[in-house]
Image (cartoon, rainbow over all chains, first blue to last red; front, side, top):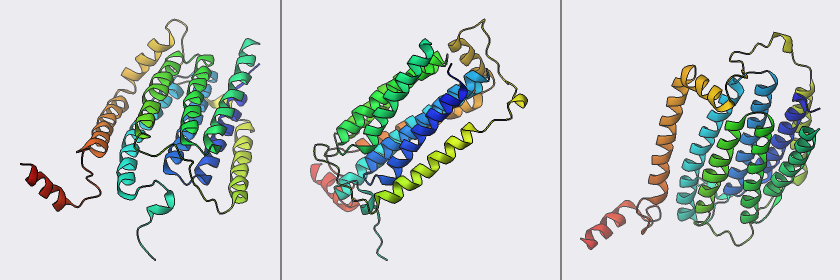
Length: 100
Length: 186
């Protein structure tokens, strides 16, 4: 029997995987991938809570999260392309332009 | 029983795919495994009776978002491995492990669930998509419209940022050079 805890633990594991990615990646595109994983982990938790409490609000929040993720990708990728044209790479360490 | 088998199978597959995404050196492998993981996640939504959410997950994530990434990656050099220097792997895994432990402890702790009351309870009379539509267009109409405006703004921003005057690099040149080249063309 699969309970709510199963789903929550799965969401926590996926979120931790995303956290490893966010902490260890230096490439900005890979960093974006890790953010997507984190958003999806939260979506699973929302859907699971929605089912086990019999409340639709969780699913609706998951919809809004998906909408936010889609617009984040659109804007972020545009900025990333501009940065790549300007600098030739998308490494996080090259983001600093001030010396100090 | 079927639910348990499906849950463990898809949990294993999702964790494996996302681990590849996080650990892979190749950007193309990372993106492909991320797309696969997104599709496996939609299986959880179908298991959780959130049919409409599962379909939206497949369409928006595997369709739109991953296609956007695939097109975006045409601008970057993805054939060579991603060079990353990590000062200390130990601290990354230590921090992530601690956060994972904390999260698991939080979700394992018993919730005060007797007090939780469903605001918009699911009913068996209407299907999932219909129920979602009813709640979305009554109680969450304003957030829905705001989300629509946000998507429009994001779309315009994406178009302006990525595709404006693609034949010449608007970012490498300074503004006067662009103006000059425009004048020469005329």
